[in-house]
Image 1: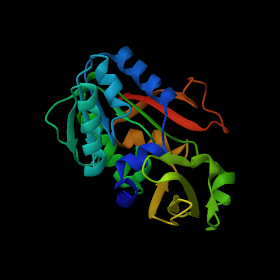
Image 2: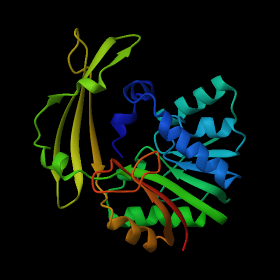
Image 3: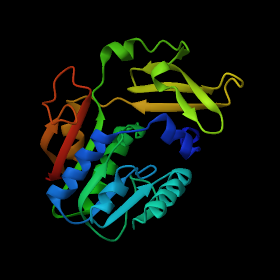
Image 4: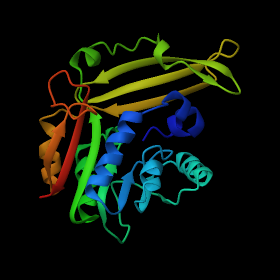
Length: 250
């Protein structure tokens, strides 16, 4: 995982605010499935805290202690009870099962090797209660965007945000794509008008193509029961932005 990128949890939340459609999608899945919910790579709890507030017993697993501490703070602030555990989604042994497992916010893409993805899916299968399901989202890779990853640093105006202490924060990104590894190697630069590059963080994200996922899931003992291309549950097409999967034990 790109640890430095997640070392400032509040900065991360300001960089990626909102996400209401994703929250609504996963809340609906939790309500449809019923029972307990486990989220792997739970970040600062933006998906899991609303689900817990709906009355579902929830556990969030996160590798970054910084993100986990912020999740705990936010849950306490809202008066919502969630169990938070620091751990690796590839090596999971929680001693209990869950009715729904979530891997949201493209967290699977931090696993770059096929073996790591299969290990994660096997961990999920071991933690599914009878009739339990896995729900997750990843990007649908855009060949145009991957081809344009030329290593040039560019300003991402759409990602600019206001920090209460720093003012307006500008974001520049430089990316290259390693086609053999299927990994985009990025470097993110955060600046204000008075201080250039106050934070610089690498971010390495794998691409998982639609034909790969069913095979990787099958090797992990899971099968796809539903697949969508966006949060509205539209079909997965070539130009869909996302791959959303609902899976069961094989």
